[in-house]
Length: 109
Image (cartoon, rainbow, N blue to C red; front, side, top):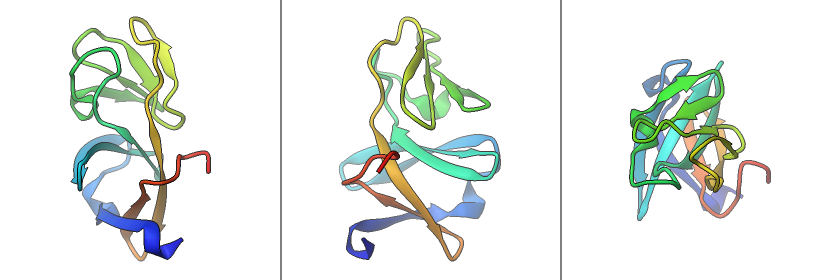
């Protein structure tokens, strides 16, 4: 598993209950700190070309600023119209104060 992990940023860079945009290779991710646990999804809303890292994070729900649809940041599930297509999630590992992502696995893996 270590070969597929890519460093994103120090965990201290994402305060609790916030979201940050992080670019890694060709991927633009929204990385969430929800009550001290870290999650990652694609950053672009599946309904319109809007950055989710600019959205409002309430609990584990991220609301898109374009049309106010929303997703569960832990699972990627669309939870509010007009969004109906789930977000891709990514496996996150926190090690030695750094957030690492495995782009080949989902959060559920």
